[in-house]
Length: 276
Image (cartoon, rainbow, N blue to C red; front, side, top):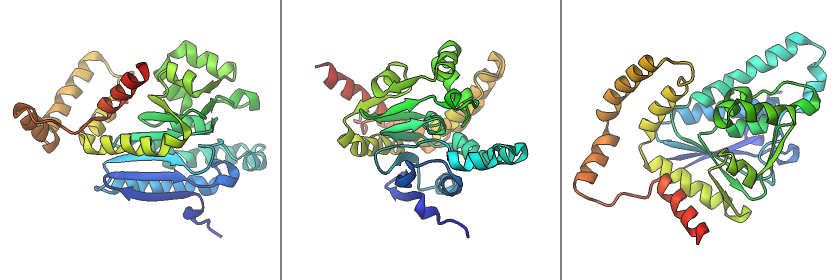
């Protein structure tokens, strides 16, 4: 009997923000088969819905995601082909999620373990509750890092730090993750939902399509030559400058109109308040 996606993920659209909320609290939102199927559907729907300009990925309960379903893994571990197909199936939702040409903000509280850590790293930006704990737990189980963490983490923190985090099974609290620039902002737990939606709304109100195009090209930055990246920049600007997001902002700037606060404005204002 097929599982009901609503048992694992809740979705809604608030203005231009598509909210995707992991909701299997009893398993601490583990990435079991039902969760994977629900995420595949939620990400596909958000990508295709033109009214969704930004995505806010978060979770119900005290924890973001506890990683892989260990009971399910125990059932397939001695069958190499079953494990292979399991991770090929994971690519049906994780790779498209990485490629969504819309800004993605993750709101993380509690544990983000293993694959849950990888899921958070797949977002464009993370805002964390002061309860957040990011755990690189793969080596403790005797398995390789997965959920694209070997792709994302070295690009975010550098190869040396990524090696150390993986081999030493490092655990980061919210402040430590922010110091490594894995987290853009840390807020009190009670404020996470409101702040996450505030930042996601600012992303939706901003040049979301241009960010999607930028994101598409940034994903190639480490494998592309300087000449080819310069060519991609030029081709991308043809699209960006011909679109409404640039036209509206250019005319507003020329008229010296005050724009809505951007996500950068909101983050800088918070840092200034904290400094005082």
